[in-house]
Image (cartoon, rainbow, N blue to C red; front, side):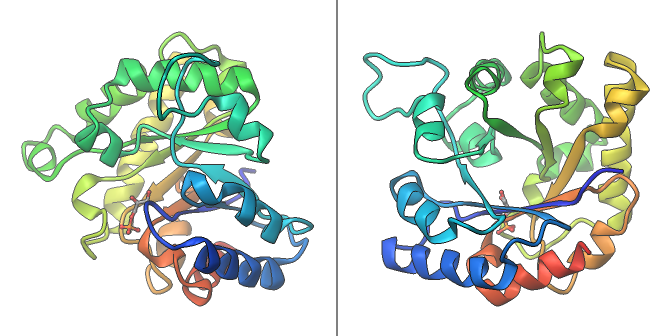
Length: 251
Ligand code: 13P
């Protein structure tokens, strides 16, 4: 049985005070409850402050990116061990915004995933097709290639330590959510890819989150699909009430 995992990707939003306030409200409401796994991923600058605000609760801390090298002359970058050092458990990798706006390739995401796993972080590896790719019936080809490339060379026991997030680009920040059937079709396809690359036992344990315009209204139906194991939430994770409603929808 895969435990549902709801993560909030705050992207480049909030200031320090707003981030702490949001995190504190979530920590107060969630407390030590563990029926749903919950994480918040604030901007890197606020990781420590948000980490302090969720301390003592069951909420995990996540970053939105990392570099693949452990240290050195990489101005502006953050190493996986540094994220661990400030209390992170998770790191989002290969988000479509990083792929599109910062030109990250599957090979880059693969290096980051390997480095994050080696440091002891749980990577949340994102994949997803554009609207043009969906309309050209290329969704399966695109997301399979992204998963194969981003997770290249990883053994089954490493796959068990990461989370995949399916985020169709056309659904991100648009209010156009994938239908439960559209999302489930891709999630099931990715699980069958994992079965063929690893074993059915491994594929059965890997959590695949859905992301893209998830909100309090649509979360429950999406999360009731057999292969949708959680959500990676953008905009709706910036308000405590809305995010808590999504978490409740996972119960
Ligand atoms: P929205 O929930 O704002 O559509 O963003 C989804 C996302 O990109 C989460 O990583």
